Image (cartoon, rainbow, N blue to C red; front, side, top):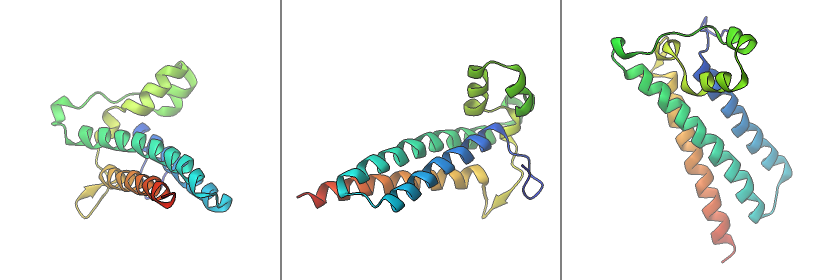
Length: 140
């Protein structure tokens, strides 16, 4: 899917999926309105998804910061990888990225999309830990 004329790279697609996991988990927790101890489970899922998202976004920021001669070669499009390669190669492509992921095609306030994504995933991690600690203090 192209938005603003931008083609998402494998790392961007992985981050989008992890944002969906975080958002759906938060929505389900909101709709479920669980007891305090159940919030820990929802917060744990959000923390794990955000930790993976931070790692993926951090990898993309790292790729974007590499000198041009050290950027890995661009791989085939994701559609081709999905059709031809085995499942674990697809997972590797989604989590490791390639040269396409090093391209900075959009910035806001000096940060690329990957930089902003890293900030928000870390924020979600912090908030999920805050909810876990708050649920512990509610029992005292």
